[in-house]
Image (cartoon, rainbow, N blue to C red; front, side):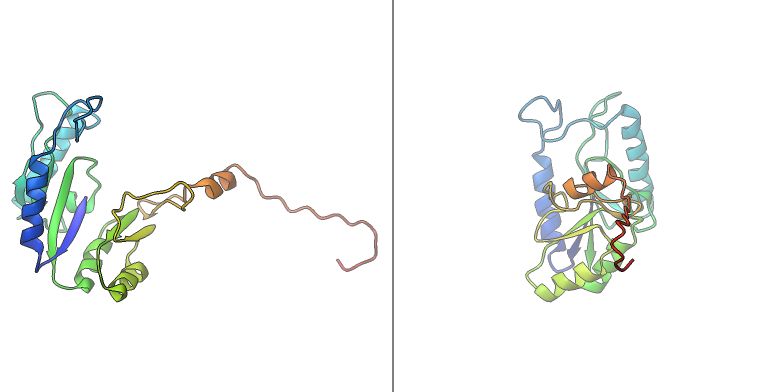
Length: 197
């Protein structure tokens, strides 16, 4: 839910994202043209609105959205906030809502530091043309997966999938599923051949 964009392209990226979000249709996920379905409950929309309010009070800028779509429904407007302070719940916690935070960074050191402030670390997408930047991110970002020029939601079944910190309790995937249901046992037979033991 957090996007860090180099300050040189921050305003252009933010404008592009706002235009894209304006065109998203919120509604029944069973309808083919729906882009954003409901949150889990109406109460969760209230929690998210509270978190947004806290972020704005601390200096974040609400760019678009930020409200439930209708009274007593779990539908929530797709939302963009920018310049979100790192001490806010929206910055630190997983909102599980149609929200994206977009903050600028000066250099790759600052970007990596901002990523690593999170208590969670499932997957991170890094978009760059610079292979040295890619390797620096792979080495230093605290996440279960670092995907270069791919979104953080990318997954194929045979890859190890799982996070670190608050996102980590192991890995998923066929190899790990088999290991979860397997008890390793050491077995030794002394067949009396007089060989080494």
